[in-house]
Amino acid sequence: GATIGILGGGQLGRMLSVAASRLGYRTHIFEPGAAPAADVAHQVTTAPYSDEAALRAFAASVDVITYEFENIPTSALDILESLKPIRPNRRTLAVSQDRIAEKSYLNDLGLQTAPWAQVDSEDDLRAAVEKLGLPAILKTTRLGYDGKGQFKLTSPDQIPEAWAAMRGAASVLEGFVAFEREVSIIAARGLDGSVSAFDPGENVHSEGILRTTTVPARLTPSQRSDAVLLAAKILNSLDYVGVMGVELFVTRAGLLVNEIAPRVHNSGHWTQQGCTVDQFEQHIRAVAGLPLGDGTRYADVVMENLIGDDMDRVPALLRERNVAVHLYGKGEARPGRKMGHINRIVKG
Ligand code: ATP
Ligand code: MG
Ligand code: MG
Image (tube, rainbow, N blue to C red; front, top):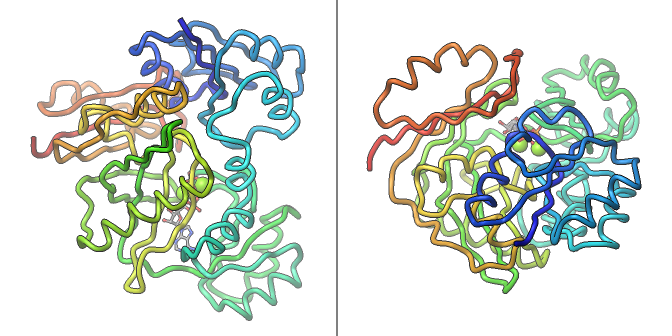
């Protein structure tokens, strides 16, 4: 049988690997750091992305390469791509690795984002604050996740402190969006170009980390169709293959795109209990060239992340009706660390 290569050995790589196994594939996970959640794969390579021999051996052992994490160094991608197909494609990675490239791409497609300005110095920041007003959020353009590398400015007095927090990294200032709510749409595109979207989920974050996703989201029918149409527009324009998460701000002026994630997404975990085919299987189907599955939602679900010492609640959660518990096998439950999640069926 075929083998699917997965870059990244966190929980998303783990759940992709399980889904691939269920379809009869073998999986090989490549992970440069510790791979606490990768033990379900058939093979795991632990090596840095600078290890060319390890990358070549990994590529030789697989039929197609996908990833759970978009910040893979270009040099490693160049080597891998010369040997095996990478899905989703390189163009998507280039766009999504850099917040400025991403926002420019989305704006060029005619999609709305928060107002933004490039910031490469304290003087740039001063000018950007002048232009966009406050409050605003300063973010590094690369490598941020779970709200890391971000600084919210509410007063011009904070300009030096905010710029210092970026440690000299290329940054972007975003106007603060007074959104009504946050939603995301998880959509898939197959190798044959067919597109299928899951029902949008409503997301609650705190301290930059996703806490819960609820389906159905509170959206009007026209917002719902806008979400599907804009996701399809992004996937088609990138000639995308796989599952993508699109994070949206719902405002009176319409839907704004916060960011895109070229992979399965935390806010899509509800699909494991809410759909016949979940986001992980859908992604594997897409990258393996199988037809996309039926992602119709058949239940109302609340997904809740288990972060840090939320793990203390697991014994009680295991006794609850209508609750599916998913644990990532990560070991130590440090504050802010995603250890697992639950899907609670609230209406079947
Ligand atoms: P991840 O990739 O893990 O989703 P991230 O570090 O890329 O996180 P963002 O998605 O940019 O972070 O921001 C995290 C959260 O902070 C958003 O979901 C939203 O709640 C809030 N936020 C970010 N940017 C803005 C903005 N311009 N206006 C209002 N709120 C924002
Ligand atoms: Mg992000
Ligand atoms: Mg985000």
